[in-house]
Length: 138
Length: 147
Ligand SMILES: Nc1ncnc2c1ncn2[C@@H]1O[C@H](COP(=O)(O)OP(=O)(O)OP(=O)(O)O)[C@@H](O)[C@H]1O
Ligand SMILES: [Mg+2]
Image (cartoon, rainbow over all chains, first blue to last red):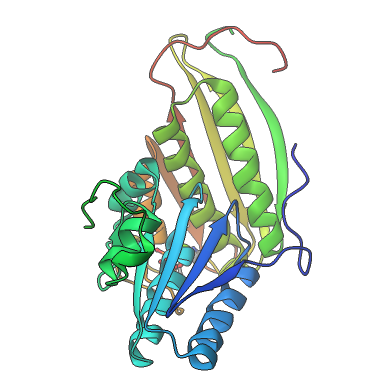
């Protein structure tokens, strides 16, 4: 069995600031404690840097269960209170199909096909690749 | 693989959130090895994550047993989650979407049932809870070594 998954303290989630948007990239399999800490870190980062938007890139995430789904929804709800908008970007098709069957509809959570599309959705067209195809954001 | 082929392939503890990661990784690997498609793998791993978390949070910890099964045409993966926790007094209510006795969304049990092919739950108040799920590959299993 593969034994090299993240252990407490060994890995942190990169939170990057792009102008007035926070870009958070989730990768691999987060254990619950790490997801909960991420939620606090993002709330703090929104307060500290007064960003207007949060993009959470989950293209590297293999499964979203009800726990991680709830964490994502709570991040978005908290960001909204702090006047920031949240977009979840790059959800894998297999994950999206599974969420529907699980019954997790994530109301209030905007999604986009890619980080670029998410940035456009947040009105940061300048940050998207120039001349790139305009992709639909759901 | 013979028609009756079945063997306990792993027994994993469920005592911490790191154990949940191990369970997900194990189910991912086992289902990939058996030839499950990507969507079916994702569904089974997600169901396992829900059931393992219930075992941890409500059952006070327990274990999961993973068994490779075959019905002569297809291979399957059977997962049995068991705990000696308080049990579930009202199974029907627990299985309905939106019911939670904690802080969850109440989707885990009902959602897991939808994500697998077979679902059975046995719970006795004061004794514990056992949930058994099985999913099957679409095609006949390819012969492989190692199991
Ligand atoms: N192993 C168990 N032992 C005791 N009670 C359980 C067990 N599993 C589930 N339950 C009970 O069934 C209820 C419904 O479980 P379910 O997984 O559907 O929702 P949840 O865990 O409360 O929320 P979610 O899974 O959406 O985060 C739980 O709130 C709990 O009361
Ligand atoms: Mg649950």
